[in-house]
Image (cartoon, rainbow, N blue to C red; front, side, top):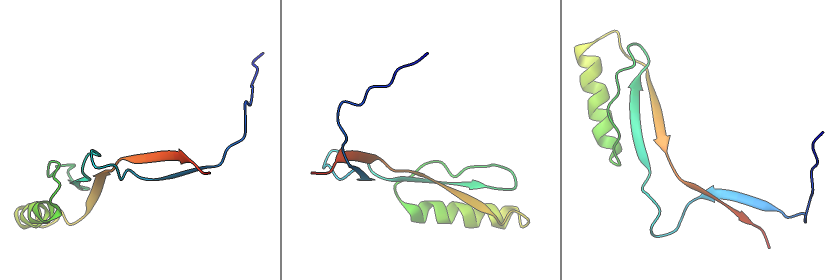
Length: 78
């Protein structure tokens, strides 16, 4: 048997972390054909270049998955 205690009800919201010390958003591309990855970068243009080079070397590899590392913060409302 487990017990559950509610101390007080509160409304919460969640959104991207905006503190000045928050880590930057990091992007990564992964080929959906062979699972090769671009490596992580803050600069999305670097990933686009990697994807185009990868497709150029492997013409049947045309699908990519974007992986985003973004930090979020939950806060109580009011």
